Length: 463
Image (spheres, one colour):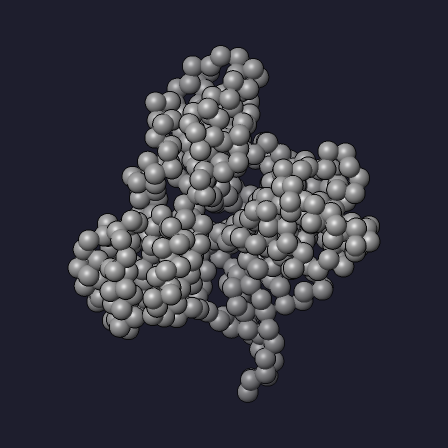
């Protein structure tokens, strides 16, 4: 036996997973409330005691961790054009596992600076202009940022002509210069910036979040939790040289405050008479819907879907549905626990959360007429061909309606322009292992892949 301990310091729960990498099995999982406000070891020790009750005492060979505690990795980005460099900055940040709390385009104003200070970002990503293109905007924004107290590191990943001048302007701040996230029009180069974001997370953010208190046990805090999940999804999709993956996929994690969506697919147009509009998106893409969540962001689901539809899906009157939504927004720790009305409402809310989040993540298709006749214009990723959907989150795994909820990630005639998967198998992460497998994959990719393929609960293809 060669046991490895994997820890996910979450915003609400600290989750621990014990894996025997020789037998390629999960020995046990447990979770306890995260105690970031006092000593993070309290919550960790609580989870470890629960785990030991299941597995017995184990002498772990290694211990790896990821974290989204204390708000996770909070980033603010600024770029030039919203649809181009600003979007590239957002994709780079989200793909590195960050939570983008502010996104600015064009020149920063004094009001913007006040908002940025109030947001208290962990990292600021400054981009703008293709190489050899516009320098005025990024230089202006560097001068504006230079007036702020140096409380957060700044990554410069814009026009290479202006990058070093920006660094000189920001000499009193912790500055890191990376290659341009969009060196040419329509070309993304986000990996170097993502690596730098993760490095800063390890070097600085771990200390700021209090996670250094747990370093006596840990061999490494590798990455933010969303980055670990993204890594697990890419591994599950692509596989390794020794073990095949399951192919292109979409993954949805519905939480209490946010809903994360991941896609592993190139997403490019498939029809001969289809043209692509905007930035070609990365194979491994992550988006975060900060207004879509089962409790803290319950109002966002209602605003997106409408109380009439939610009430209809739950079999409730609109007045009763509204009453229960208000109750849950004020009692965010409430779970259905056998209550038939709350069970029905949670089904409707989770279904609409999945539908809304995946629709926002996926691309769209529009018809237009040109001299060549009917032409289709695609924006964003085409996921219609994806045959695998992965779901996790309390509202999906603690219910008998998991598959039915997950099907709302698929294409619907009610939204004909949305390029969501048309039909797919559903895989359910019942035991919250995705982040743990992302951690494990850094050292044992084949083991992590085989465990995921074995442990994820699969429901067959359905139209």
